[in-house]
Image 1 (spheres, rainbow over the protein chains, first blue to last red):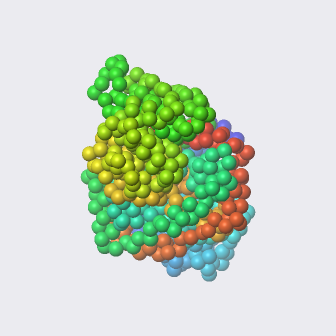
Image 2: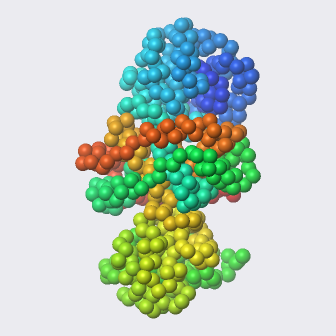
Image 3: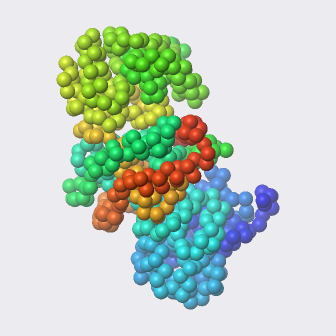
Length: 316
Length: 316
């Protein structure tokens, strides 16, 4: 292990590229820099490039403030106007381009036109999958999907998938070295794991509002003070294991499995009709109590930082 | 407000009854006593009555240790062998009998045979609804469903429903005075809100395992470090509001609503076949790493206490 006074560069992917300087790119870049990686970033839009350094500095400040920077000296940030400069300098590019297959494919082709063989492209894609993104690449095996949960510098989860297990293992080690929790998929899936779970839960949350069982603020309060709180500590499968008493999941499945299947059959399948959308928008207006999205985000981040700190303490 | 040195009894439901001395009853009783209520408890089974005081004492100790006891002097606990003694002494009975309609109805009849008009019966039922439980009661309006999330002395959520809004408001105030977060349903629903959400999420969690996308430990890790963590701070509706950027939920629904509906159509609807159950049991065995259900529960409670403390701090 490295001593905290010895300031060196990380061994794994010392220079990280950023392709796409939006909110996700800013958050990633701050995390990479705070952990000692040099970062070279590109975006096709000049305004995004111009705003980038300030946004990244705020992320680094936040990580410093909560003691979440790595042991290494901060990395150096440069922003360039040609993605090929990123491709020739970096050993891993975190790609955060819009969720558009032809656009991403064209970007990968441009990157590959100058990239060394060992360059890894790690896509933050949330809704696309490896097989469609890698199509037509010179070296498809260099592509990994690595979906963070927003904001990536605070949320630990990174869902990774790719065909080359040795590379996936190295990429997982890289994210782990940044304090992230990489989770490897065995098979690609639209929405990976987390957004599939979130989508399934939200469908029922929308249904409860649509059916008039409860309004938006009540549904959110129930989640935050019930299952959401629990799932910040134990997963859904583990929660049913504990729900089974001393016999655990085995007992649960035998005795309550059939009633779960009956419950599943009664869950809603709402449509986002104009009427339902109006209920959701009204409900959020109530729940927000006049706070803007930016203010609500600040509050969320403060909450996340508090919960993350507490979890870390409880685990050690 | 009451001064912290003045030790008095709570004004609202000073004497609380417990019908059903299992785990839920123990947890509720500890919470009531720690907040200064006298508790009179009954269970038909002598062993449950005999174990009760020790279990309750451990809950009170835990609440003391985490600074979650109320400002009032601790209440007094008595355990009786005849539920009619509870019915004549208490002003609210928290009923935690098995989830069996005829059994609960018979219990309510016995309670009503001696109860004063003002007695409130508050049922912890998780899977039954008010309309079926109240059938045949002398005064159905005295029944409220008040479903806690387990364990009730740690988890804030209590989902309440009943036909008498004035009574519901008073019952909500009671639970709020215990540091709980009561959430009122507008319409009864099997599974109330929280277990419907949990069931919807678990259906997809099972599907992901059944489809071979990821195993149990990975699905749980993705939830705990992604959406679960987020939902301990903001609800699902609010999360999509923040996901919509400055335009919020309105923007989200317009631009990403259709893709959510498409996602909903691709979610799994698994069956708990022997094969799927075996995968779940194996996965839990891996995830548990040799820890017993009791040890995992202890770890969960330690985590919950840490997260609750951190949330409270972040809010103030």
